[in-house]
Image (tube, rainbow, N blue to C red; front, top):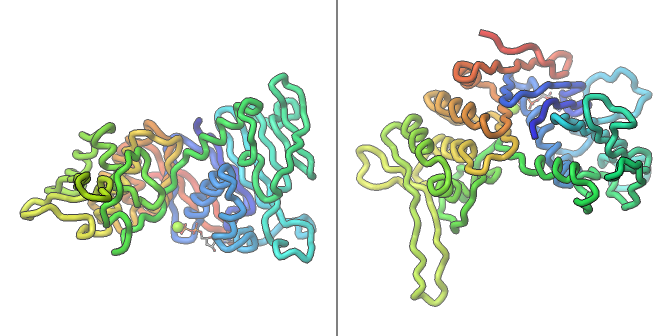
Amino acid sequence: MALTELEISGYRSLRNIQLPLQQLNVVTGPNGSGKSNLYRSLWLIAQICEGSFAKSIAKEGGFLSAMWAGPRLNHKKPFRMSLGFSTDDVTFQLVTGFPQPSGSLFCFDPEIKEEVIWVGPQRRKASTLLERKAGLTWFRDMNGERVEYLVTLSENESILSQLREPHQFPELFQLREEVRDWRFYHTFRTDDEAPVRSPQVSVRTPVLSHDGSDLAAVLATILEIGDAEKLYETISQALPGRTLRIISNEPDFTQKSPRSTELGIGLEADGCSRTLLARELSDGTLKFLCLAAALLSPRPPFLIALNEPEASLHPDLLVPLARLIVDASEFSQIWVSTHSMALADAITEISEVQALQLSLSNGETIIESCYDE
Ligand SMILES: Nc1ncnc2c1ncn2[C@@H]1O[C@H](COP(=O)(O)OP(=O)(O)O)[C@@H](O)[C@H]1O
Ligand SMILES: [Mg+2]
């Protein structure tokens, strides 16, 4: 499944955005122009499918904070935040607003006002697969008949996350599972206490977790069943003179309570008489290894989204990173929000994909044009 369009309105600086998407999407612009808001809107779509939409909105400060705070054309109309996307096959739209005023402590929670999924480019009755509106939900069954969905739904979560009958909704299940597969990388933990700096119990891990804590297991998995040659080559280009080593302890079964194998990361460095351990590596080096692990996954997700991956990377690492991003776009759809023109330029140089340039006008994110030059 590839995303063909993102349609967001009423979310932070995204008053009303329709953004056609490609296999590789690079978004750039000055600070505060809305790069992270666009990235987060994708993350929210993934949370909708997980059933964590309301909690995610709460975590970023609540619905009042997330709703578009700029000028509104019609103040009499109730506020609506809408998140939607299209794939080659279907379009999904979720419209949320405030619940009816009441004395409830949850009166500022988002409430689903409308939810609809249709097939093809235009929303028509005949092409609608599912519609939820004004307390009523119906879906189109396998015979093409409109059937009422009688299950009680949580009012602040999408029906997509609450479906329980895969045999009845095969396309919707597939859509949900594919969106749940998306991966988001915004910050990797590299502080002194970060799990990535200590050995971790080993388990074969083809996809890096969002915070990079299972880095050693993912790198070891790539070396065993993935593109080991590419991983070594990337590291030798980005970190000249250094070679990756996965350090493991052998479980000792003679002990009363043997511990499982633990894996850690090490780098052999020219001129260094011993392997440097993860706790001794710089933030930038660990971060680059995380990005390499995410982008060289032996089980590429449908979509990988990176928010400001250039943060704390030395400029010399941007070209190898651009190469990883472009190569990964062969297997996964890619979203990159960046304020590094050097990274955007390097991606264009390798792939000819132009970055989208954002700006802020009257508090609203505007898609200026394709970055050119
Ligand atoms: N609720 C809101 N309504 C309107 N604008 C908002 C809201 N919340 C944040 N913003 C604006 O969003 C912008 C920050 O967007 P962000 O995506 O973080 O920028 P960047 O491009 O630096 O990643 C700021 O200009 C801020 O004023
Ligand atoms: Mg940002």
